[in-house]
Amino acid sequence: MTDESTDLRRILTECRTIAVVGLSAKEHRASHQVARYLQQHGYRIIPVHPRFDSVLGERCYARLADIPHAVDLVNVFRRTEDVLPVAQEAVAIGARCLWQQLGIANIKADRLARAAGLDSVMDRCIKIEHARLIGAG
Image 1 (cartoon, one colour):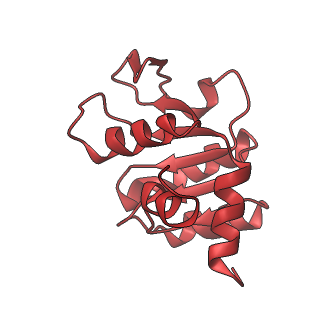
Image 2 (cartoon, rainbow, N blue to C red):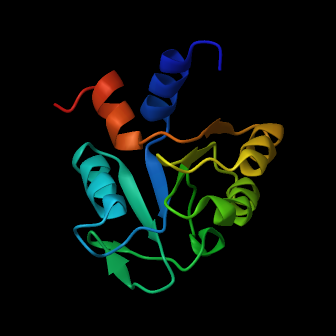
């Protein structure tokens, strides 16, 4: 990214439907807190987790391919070694961005997403970036 803040702001402004892979129903988990924040700021959150029926009042899907409508951004809360298959699914469903949360940086997934024309963000918290670039209000 040439101007990283500009690109991140564009992604956060344009991508309004966010599939959160690994979204936990447990309120103390970072994935839950981040998704709740995004939901409170007008984003449509789609939980992706095979163990839950719903999270944050939204139907939960076992995998990205099960989501019956368009997804703009795939936000990943999985171990780094588990991200590549998620990136492959993100490409397959036509997502516009792959976002690996803070502490997650799978280079192969990043390369795959970029080669397919997706924006790709690694090792950043979408909640922190939203608050920094767009504002919490």
